[in-house]
Image 1 (cartoon, rainbow over the protein chains, first blue to last red):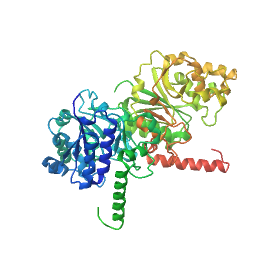
Image 2 (image 1 turned 45 degrees about the vertical axis):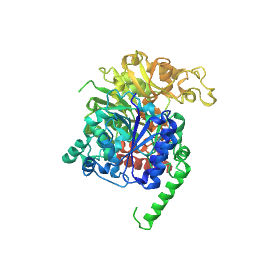
Image 3 (image 1 turned 120 degrees about the vertical axis):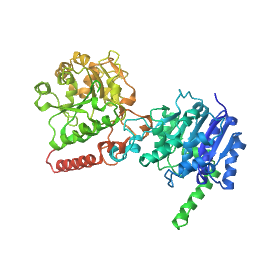
Image 4 (image 1 turned 135 degrees about the vertical axis):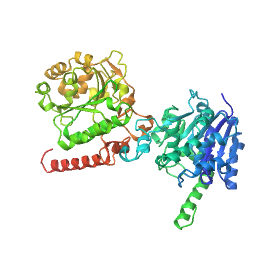
Length: 288
Length: 288
């Protein structure tokens, strides 16, 4: 099995505490802590946030490698074509260029959204037989609405309602297969042909490029909209999609209490103060 | 076009909109839309309702065949003297006579209740190996109460607590073997022996006749009483058996939103208004 275990995360400074929690959850549940390399794709981080992230190294012996996509001309070239919102800042698109951003010796990458929490040894997923597919992921239960909108027909879409469609929040990537798909080239092509306007951010792009060419993983590797009823069923990766988020108090989602302790109470309270501060700032009209 | 995929539905005019949603869900998730043949068993449909059902033909190129049972001599003579169930109406007995009612060239038929949402290609069931069994179905999780009633003390002469018992909402039917079982004759005999009146009508009859002679399907082919927490498990067919129905406002069942968009918002609200009118008529004593 390829070692080390390469895990890629992308985030900006605002999501530092979530990135910290994903990393800590992986290390807490793995037996191979010293063999994990986290590839952190981000822009500028405040010093105290960076310092907290670094404790992953001191607590578990894992390695952190920092990558700044903004310094990569190819990234800048691709994101110029892509939409940006508050919820989807441009940093999310690093997922499309992982084969260009990571060092050449990396042959397999596990990409995780930062609103996930891992509860089983990550090597169980990382070492999976990909059966020659370029990516492996979990089917998205809400695919029909995402693809085709209201009444499952209002959106002009390149997708068929019956076509399999994955959630890209947990993505196991075979680098060679991924690189061969030439995602940056495809993005430009979609922009020129007008397809890009019909797509739902990069998840749609990935599904279009890898249509019928992905390995379906069991639901437990990407449990979306996690509820208390799921706790007893042994999910491996919890994905906090939906409006309720465990980084707020009283979220009522699956493993909300565990999440706080994985984040650690100190970090939980710090990020909560920052969030409340930002909300108050927005109320009084300050930016940020 | 390949071999036709035959699907039988039974419903009254008052249930036209859920029937439409079931049919549209089958069309949306199928890869063989123009092979789908819907056999619609009813007792006459109002012109606007029938026109809406015809949308299935326009949207998917599927075929619709109507069977007006109010004019069917064989069905009416079978019904004569049988008990009437207010909620199910005696139209449900058509399920026991499918082999007599369908055109002779059909050898395999899929029967679905009209309170279902289909999420996977239904043709998988048409292509299924029945392993010599006359029918395939899903084990009913509520079978013990259905068989043995309150305190599990009724009908102990007919059923045993630990026997298997399927939910008849979804059936894969081998016509020849189904016909050989002589369900109409057996039902009449149960009626004359007073058995029919103390069991759950045709589902119990099917289970008595096909006891230990049916192929169990994965629970995902007929997910009973679906809750939001089930959404992650990629159910193929969601069966809204519980007290909450997705055609009600704010139902909180699994895939409530997807159901509304499958039914389409126009049909959803038209049906909702009809139900309110019917309710008011019942309250003021004008009947159904």
